Image (cartoon, rainbow, N blue to C red):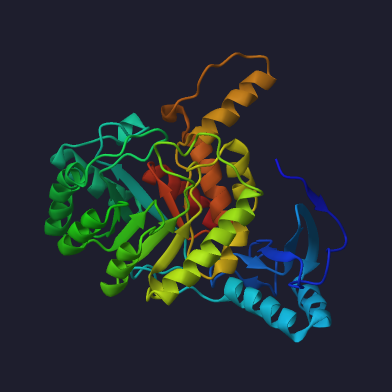
Length: 377
């Protein structure tokens, strides 16, 4: 794990030459802060910041109030001051509706995998009637978005043909539109042909684990004004968990998105049609994932809505096994079917960090947890 030295002083004033500066709002409820700034126009507030600087291969973190941060940048130069103000503006600015969804509130995205090899057995389904029934139940249980996928992206999953993927999703997507399900429909795909199929059927969102990695995909979603979720993934599902490497994962992923968003806007994508997903478990080991989760609020500085997908992932099993080991109990595995509690814990953590979209296999339980937490916010 990376050693971030907590100190009273930065390497240099914010955004000076020779250092990289990153800011993380420290989220609080409105009851904890009477005059706080809203994060992304949502339900969490902040006055104080964790300011992280990188110089060469060293990192330092300093706690500062927002006014102290601005004053420090002002002492350096007008350019530094403007950058500091823009970063605060990005954090505070109310997010535009995404696929008509109000981003000032938290939302649940329900997962439906139309695959025979999804990592979570209970999410595998190919019977149209059963899938439709599950969709209706998820909407009733509180899913704002249904995320339909026809290709497994679990670690080590083999790439399948677009034809196979499309055969899996086409019927249920048509059925969902025919039944007029009262939910936003997201299509989980990394393939241009399947994106086009989904658009022709009438899906509302494209959820691309490959991060819109080709210009033809970008040009397509931009030309059709299609909202898209861009995820970070190191390598591909087939090999992504083979020794992934980062300097410091939250900052590396933040830098990826900062460049990606700039490139996408330059290529014609409207910022209102863009959300990001740091990609927990996609080309990241336990320490990379935990570093990202501990530093989630850094991504508000990108100025777009954020999705987190942690539902029943292996990280939860790894942590549970470590807990057993610390108590002298041998446990070989804690499988996906036993990871609901961990999923809910991380969902609440995401909520408390102001994350707008939480992707889950367990809509009823996640919605209930968020509802209870929201009542205390």
